[in-house]
Length: 312
Image (cartoon, rainbow, N blue to C red):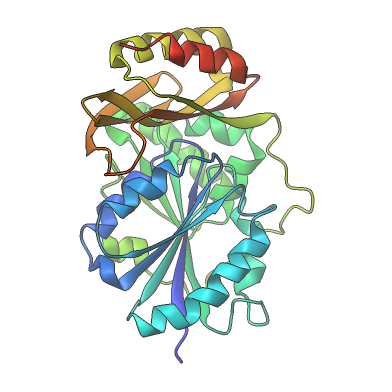
């Protein structure tokens, strides 16, 4: 059987990986794509968003893909080999958590790696947030690693910065990886041909993986409450959390139960929050608000109390 190309999609927290993937999947035949979704929190928010695009296969891995979940990734690909060929899947996309180091995964796809019989690594796509990339690359070894291994750098959210700031963001990326292709995008609008382009292995230079990969003090907290909740109160509560923790409060994502079984997709990076109507809860699914909050020094008890206080 011919090997199936795999695109590794990575990028720091909140850069727009899932938004980009949504765009790409709406412009190709999603039935031919298998998505392996990796989330650090336990709520599978991104997986649920991707599944709304239709009949493509979605597999979930919870935890950091380059740490405890690494063996699960190998097992997942072993199971996928026959399934992909039987169902006519032509490509696989692995979307990593924002705290994963993709260099740790490369050996799995090398010639003698455990996945290499049925799959080959086509390329690494790294999404960077034009608003925060300079800070992230300067302060986070994980963000540096994600940029360094990229074959394609997608500089997202260009519409939210000035031309001068966009040029500075490009310089920050080029300082770490001068060889990768670079495209600047708004809301993850990237051409599928760019996203799926294969890189010649001879041209790819991989930095060595870190034997002791660490997320530092970052932690993901899943907070749930039956609700329903008032979105304005939730926004005000999250602003208070941000005021208390500053840049240590990195990421918000989840679903808000807005009443009458309606739900709202809530996503945020530091102070920037976006909300989108997301239909209704499925039959048999508990109508509840589920939010994953990622940061340093967040108190889970306080977070649960804060969400509960946002009830309508």
